[in-house]
Length: 331
Image (cartoon, rainbow, N blue to C red; front, side, top):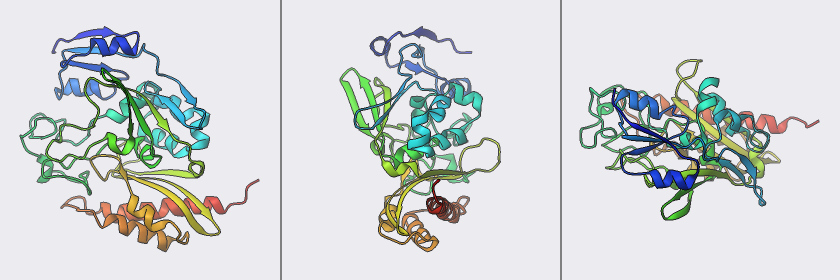
């Protein structure tokens, strides 16, 4: 048992004032506490931020939905604005974990969770994410969950979040506060590819605190779907996942948002597939061609080549279901 100090902050300002290099912020603790138990991280002090507020979901004047960083996953999934405006966000949260975990886990913590690569949590094996320069055991080891796109020789891990996939599709904004003031980061710039620094997951400075996630208004996000493919029916991390929202008119795709999980070191926006779909007929052939355009960048390994057809089929399934829903008469 490694001793550590524990303090509670009553405000964001107080939390930032308490921070130093050996400190970690504690919210739900559903990832951090596990990593401490495993010995992956050993902060000298925890700052409990559960008393600083940041637990509300509000609609801004321009229709943006502002989600406080400490909104529990269960509250996010149940909120009327989320369920009606962007249902795939609620679906992703429910698919991500049991009710007990959703009652503890927070929106901000979900963005910041570490990879679930089996070697990251195993201190007996080399892992560049855990110990920079030690090597990547996944290159020659168990590789079913390895990344298809954007990996580097130093790390093949994927981002584990379900929630982050629809947030990537929605062009969400991450709002953070630090010693330099408030910073608003486009979601696509928040997480990093591994490169030669796989131990750095995000572009958030360690002294900054995520305070909110803003979801811009997108009318056709009301027609959205999240599909997660996993190795068992009970809760498990995705082999692949697809978040899609589509705007259809007269059998044609006017606009589309598409993001993929289980693919990359960060939540992956499928922009090539989006571009290929706009202006095309809403058919399985068009969906398959768009998926193929996106997956040209895939670099499968020995154990994860099955992910390529799995992703293609899941993209086609999700878009086909959305088209079928749109074709149903409204009462």
